[in-house]
Length: 272
Ligand code: ATR
Image (cartoon, rainbow, N blue to C red; front, side, top):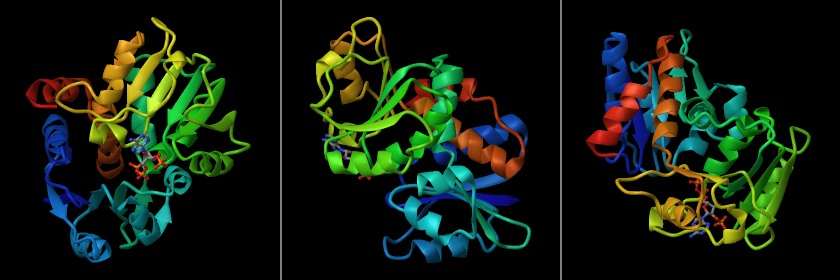
């Protein structure tokens, strides 16, 4: 049986084994998928050890940048993101690295949520790995503007500078903008600590602005609760993105893309 795993530290909370098991059931694929805890100082040993006979692996915190450096070949998305979340062992034994997070976000936004990004004024909050992975696919969707907004302005400026020439990208600090926008995507890790990025409430036009938090949880995230309080038209969490990035990985490995809608319903009602 072909073996797959998600490798991280911590990894016990990962929903990937459940999601991939449901994908395999749905598509009739015989695979196993496990969660592997890698020691913080030996991700390389864990990845290479697993892929001696495993076919592929997902990589999660805090190893996505290391995975990028370890693979032999990368997709354009992985190259732009500077991070790899999906590794596949090629027939000749070399490792191919992809990053499916951005495609997962776009699929969730554009297909599941039916948000046409073309022409929208978009704010991307955060300048870490999660934000970086989203920029190339967001620019490809041709927004009117994509502004990277970060607590530490210099990081937003550095990140935006890497994508100059690829679309209408800019950078700003939290208190620099007060004009309402069409879509705000929270790619900071603030929700993990129950915090809300310190942006102005004026960025949200009541009844119009759409808000998307890449995080998700049992209950609405801190950012989505705040956005709802400001009158955001919709507040969407990152569970759909999680499932879509997994579907992209599954498609890369198995050559078949699972239907995600029923899986999303299952995860929402089970525990989320
Ligand atoms: P990740 O790979 O998950 O993006 P990261 O590289 O550590 O993680 O980046 C975390 C992001 O969340 C950063 O943009 C960080 O802002 P700074 O660059 O100013 O540190 C942002 N972040 C984390 N906690 C935050 C908070 N409480 N308020 C606002 N931004 C926060």
